[in-house]
Length: 153
Ligand SMILES: Cc1cc2nc3c(=O)[nH]c(=O)nc-3n(C[C@H](O)[C@H](O)[C@H](O)COP(=O)(O)O)c2cc1C
Image 1 (cartoon, helix red, strand yellow):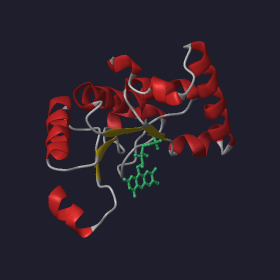
Image 2: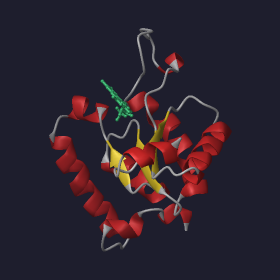
Image 3: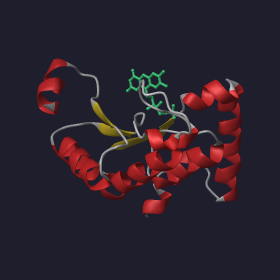
């Protein structure tokens, strides 16, 4: 499927996964995707695990803070297998520099923040960037590239 898609475009093609599948299945799926030509993995999309919220409205995927642990767990499992072999992007419940840093050290070359911006506003980006600089300094890194996948080494 990736080979066919790549024949149609010069743009990279990444697989974005849901956080609701079994971790083993997610790892198998993402490894197969990379072996088949995917240029990277994005983990994760929103969840339909409505047990995460008190009074859920069954109208779609849930994002934001309640997704944080679930999203990280699946990202980390994938990173353990695929870090260094493909581009990994972490998304889901990231709401602070600490959480972004955790994902970077786990193996993410990029992190995405969506719902966090709704609750913390656009200043959040500046705060996360400033916080990341402090966290990098505290760990003795000169640039962020050195921190990517630090937990995998
Ligand atoms: C309103 C809304 C629309 C979204 N639309 C898309 C989409 O079109 N394609 C996609 O891959 N993910 C989409 N997502 C999922 C987000 O990209 C992201 O994976 C998810 O919200 C978890 O990140 P967050 O907790 O930072 O919001 C959407 C999320 C929200 C809240």
